[in-house]
Length: 363
Image (tube, rainbow, N blue to C red; front, side):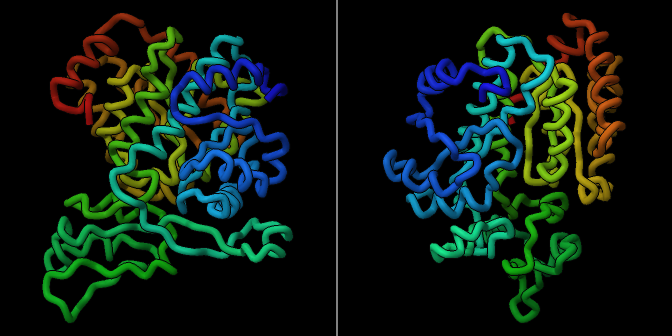
């Protein structure tokens, strides 16, 4: 934490004031995820947010494994990596944004209406210590199917056709039945969420109520800090953002990391703007970028903002390149464009009112 420029004692005091649950300092947890077991046993918690200063340390697979040993729910671990706040942030922004990130992670764990569907998997990053202790598997999310909401594969087979792994299959001998999931094949890519017309499919990290609460926590906390711009990033594409935050700075920006960008349509771009974001940029992985829905939804958002009177709609929302120097240049350009956007104009105050009037502000 000290390397990020955050006062650890002050952060702990602030975290305890969030009333999201007990806060515990666990020295060495980033390198030794097995320490999580004793920490959660002592707290009696079923869910935990691990705050670290390094991207993907400790690995989420091991945290789930050792957390379960201490009594956590199968997917009851969230991780906040504060290295994204390291460079070019003033101390006040670092402190308030760190709290926002923790609050958003806690909201993601608390807000899900449905118990997420999961399966056991051999952990790809499990340590020798885990293997020797007999803990060689971890929990991973899979798609859940609401049979009551599903239209049935005799009327709709969109999810079956969209699944790249053939994990969803038709029950040909049962008329009107919902598809069957082969959990062992499901890669949680969320492609099926893009095409389901009835909302019958669910996936951990994609619940609308959860995403709305995360956005509110990141963008509208009432802590006096300026409204940031927001990057909605696929988790597998987020590492370059963390490197950028460490070296060159992402001052004025916050990041909402999602398992994948499936199901993140135009409504969520508008919700983020209505919640206070000056700009919304999407950072997809290669698989997300391959989906036609990404550019289709982005075009719709820009068209709607233009219809609502925002002459800067093309700059208000966009897609970032996924890698290296191009990402750095794109962030730099987006920062410059956002700074040029007037702060009191139809694109902000009036735009938020307009968005809320069309019924998207509280979705």
